[in-house]
Image (cartoon, rainbow, N blue to C red):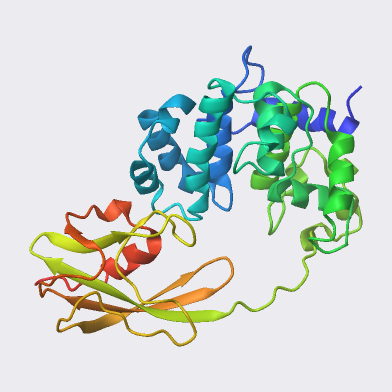
Length: 338
């Protein structure tokens, strides 16, 4: 027997489910493709549906199945990911696809535990793929679900300490049948009705059961522990153009922006040393600011059209779409000729 809250939620979802390219609509007589569910869930981490749509379309057109992705060149995948951020996700996509092909015959494991053993798949993604693609009643908890459950159960313990309490309630609600639809319904409710600011409680299918609404505190939940201030770092980035060629390099495979196309930079530290890639009349053309998960970064942008033999990097054609956002910001400062 389903939890009455899940019953109400699924009835709402049957009518109000979002039309998303990776999703099988409620009532369909087929399950979602695990490759597409996995790909979309990885892309959606720390990112919005609106931002992901075009990337998802490009990836599935270029690499329609896990074997196609496993056989792809690293550079092509990193270039296709450029601008989506959190680039370790793209490196982990390749690792995971190659393990699925090499060790599982090109088929994703059908259990949460089996999926969790794959590289780059954490608890949330494993649960989401298991529930949505394979019908396992896994407990799926993302940021939307945390918000919905915190309000529904009036959990006032600040995050992240509240997560065990949230998981207990989420598990109580998860049905043995239609677990994938339930998980997606919770996500949709959080994204469209139970939003971070000004939740539309009058439209919510769970309003009658919401303890947070009854107590008048729904809009204040979930509570969050104060964040520590991020440290700040500085550095220099060097833009050199020779005719139609630019001086670019591929960043090391591990670390920030690993494997991505980039312009040469100095170290990023509290007191960076200038490290131009070759001797030239460099001129400062501005600065760019970018926020990473654990620190903020400001780079002084230097430019030259002098030629030289760089001690790192290579001269070549540049597709600006293959640059991470940080370096795209720097390129945007290149003087436009009048």
